[in-house]
Image (tube, rainbow over all chains, first blue to last red; front, side, top):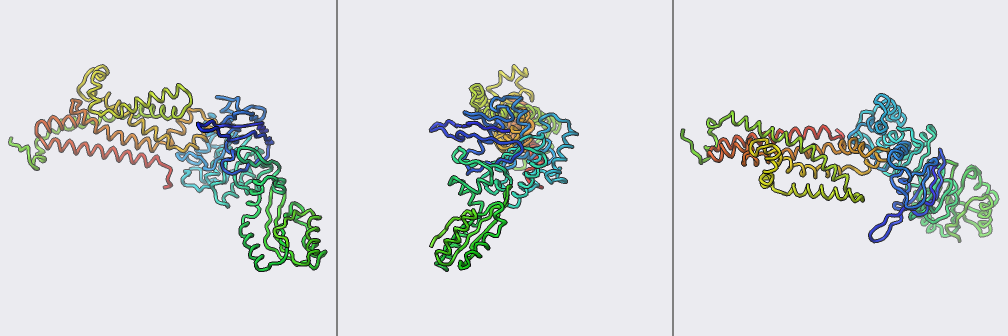
Length: 344
Length: 233
């Protein structure tokens, strides 16, 4: 278990002191994927570097399985780091070594003999789906393949914790999804804790169990991914959620504007369904109860999270005021989150 | 024997070249260059490493060490070689017991070229992506493991191309040292060529030095290409 308690990190400068991390308290459970999302400069990279002692907190305590990280120095610190893997945005592979030699690197550091090193590395290379490429150099691989090598390298010393610092930020969407699937597979098969730092909400939604949102060094919101997506409390969280919910948000605004221009009448609402609601025939039931309401679908999408589906639907409702009001009341009654984009 | 010491044809009196002297001078030049190059390589990497490891440190002793090393490197890199030889004559006498002959050239060759190479080594280390070093730290590598498993292999092409450039300037330095009695092709060109008014000797010595430089550059380039895996072949 990782416990971060009242942790702050200050960088004293000549002009003024910069607060990179401010009073952060978090608990990350064994075997979960914990996501920390924030814009660049929010302090998430500094926070994750305090987990493996690359940085030490100015105040507060980072405890990993009852060991206080900032108290470790020299050999015990190196041994603790050997039990933690880390992957990076730019992979940070050694270009002078082949794939196999990169993966054996951490094993060399702990003094494992060559035959065992090669055996273990070969197995890991197969786990990340790169069998046959053992003797290639990083420069001969694509970005996604390089990140797979970095993941195999990070897993070489059987870590209990894997730290991922923007590991998919340099990859295209398809490759990102492949790497995320690999992380999910690793979590399931190896039962390790993964801490993911990202600015992409997509990454959080796809693989994380719980999450925290960081802004200006502080954690402003925390909870299960499902809850945070369903009820974002802070404005910054809503921004992140809406970016992810509808990447075509701007398109939708265009469609709504066109619709408003074409049909200056009617009420436009945004509905958010989650979990089992997404499976119920709520809309058709609403139309049966209020048959004089006309309905026009503007936009819609469904996303899978680790805990279930979240759906979004934009509707134009036409009809007399009482009927339309009744229909929206019905949606409220069915506990569908309704947001009026334009009333009448 | 009638020989004209002026005019274009004076370059082509090959019969006047004492080839035995020429080859032994070539041998001396190569020996001086290689011997000093080995020591320059070792010293340069050590000094470069010291400069790199103490850069930006907050430890007062590390900063002091950095300051002293940087001063030493900058001073000896800046002193013109011909002056350095003269300046170091007493030291040379003390170290190798003589101030003439190929051996006598070694101290000033090494002291002049090592700081030059040290700066190239430091630069080569700084060009390594910091993320790679951070990754090694995150894996629990010791400082020493980072040096010989990350810094040296990752900068190897730059280290070799640096030693090639240093080797070529060392060949030039040996020629200069030759003028004040260190032996080698520079010495031969000066004594048997210039002072004896034998332009052919000077020309032949020049051509041999050029050949040595070209071989040095070609071998260096070949090794760099072999080491550099950053670009897919």
